[in-house]
Image (cartoon, rainbow, N blue to C red; front, side, top):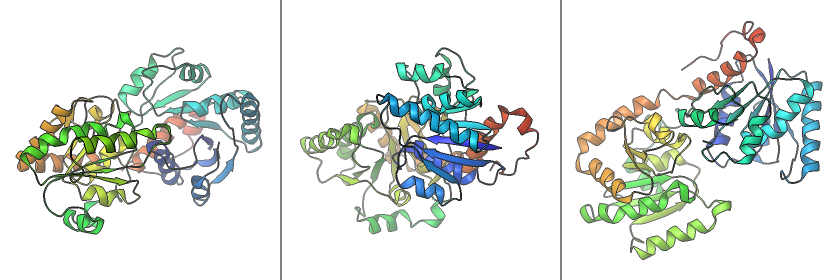
Length: 383
């Protein structure tokens, strides 16, 4: 089976790009021949090419540049026809607008991966849904429910993302104390951390607002925020820095910026916080759980499907700094509970391997092409 996959972004910016990489990296040995088309140029083009995958770049520009969008549709269609493609897989709704129309031109089935939870159902998401698709893959039950309510109704199979568990294995990383020393972090006292792009919906300001109550009881505690500025919300970084200053927390909260060695930063933390609002899934939550960290996440969206309250983590409402501080203190006040949650968290994380994720995506693709599905054995495994 030959699958043409269309990807709008060519730089690692978040979980969606990591999922794309995991699919191609883990799905190379599953009797699927991949052909990747990026709609912009960037570092991921060469990275995918180095996997031995046929990789092309078609610069689409912005959607309002209609002539470029139309040209892109015809170019994708021409490549699909010339290369004997069996199906087009579009990454995110924005790509289905071009890739889905290209599939229509050449009479191919198309599938797209909805990486968001379309609560607001923007007209662009509605437009993408109007374009024929065999299925719209979703990454959480929340997303599945929201997408299924958009007309016309398409099949919405659920495929949870995976985590590169080999990178988030505490056995191959420094101990938390060694990680703190290596990264120049405080060596004593509780360390509470959060990882993510600096965007308001990610909730860094909520964690900052929770810290005074934590410090009132544990004055030697620190907080570390790992994440870089986001181009669309560049002002948010200045906002949280001012918030830190206004609360007099400059010596207690560390703005670490964008970091590539995320496993070591999370390993250094005693408690991991994920304070996002309606997170579509939350790959970074699984990563922290894989390291055996006590985790606190937002009580909405994907985290509800990952965490069982008070068993392998805690859930708190978005923008509720009091609830978040109470959850942090619950862990700090009860080390035995924190440890049992951490052990259960690691066991839960082991269910989300990138191998299983890639196989499940491929299974969805095969299910839309039953004549091919009968011929191809499952060689990837489901671990």
